[in-house]
Image 1 (cartoon, rainbow, N blue to C red):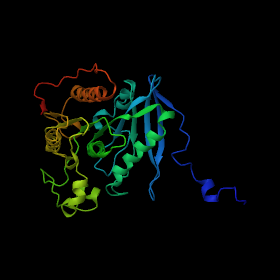
Image 2 (tube, rainbow, N blue to C red; image 1 turned 120 degrees about the horizontal axis):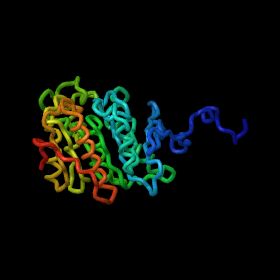
Image 3 (cartoon, rainbow, N blue to C red; image 1 turned 135 degrees about the horizontal axis):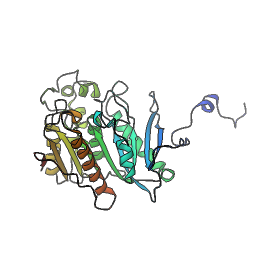
Image 4 (tube, rainbow, N blue to C red; image 1 turned 45 degrees about the horizontal axis):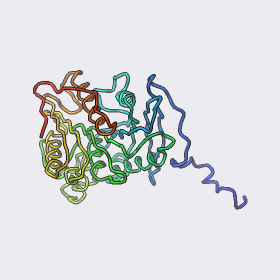
Length: 312
């Protein structure tokens, strides 16, 4: 072997995500193309992380981005799942978002059996870095990014939006996400070492107060925070609705913009409410994202039903 030939280990390794060729597109819907299972990072000692990228089939300019973060208690879940109430939608919720003029990146992140916090937040930052690096060939504009997450993914989306500065995000859509790992709430104790929150941190939040605070979106609100839409079921028995009311109050107290919609009768993942209301929540969330980055008034007029509350 001469000095110009790569070492055997280098020659057999897959190309690094920064340089790897993009996969051929699929066309799951007439108006949408999909790049599935695109590697974006290779954390040391962990599996390669991938994303699915949903795009309009015929974009006319660089696209704003929705960065979607899945739920699952930080311990399970799939990047292409927006929750049980949307799994049977056709077109899928991601195809529907892409058809309005967004790129949608549905991203993997390391689960708590693979790494503890802040690895999950680091992974989302890596996804944004990769998307920015490859933005020219992907046809996206990462300076117009809205994060969108549900449950544990909402927690991570909120943290990313509040702490990522290069470039800053345009806003966040958070469905029933935890915002405070330090405070005891109904059915949750920060002293319990067996909660999903404790497994995320690697110990009970009360025994690691600095780390619990670092992992709590409510501790990171600030005057220049991007706008937030927080939607939460009033009867959520998994993540108390007070997580969203507290985050909205903290954002408002710091001079940032927060829209809060508490949904009467709704449990976690929108259980307990009829299908039209779930559609309404989705359409309202999409309209919020459109108004932030499409530089136009959204045509969506999803109205809250009687009895819904918007605070403040």
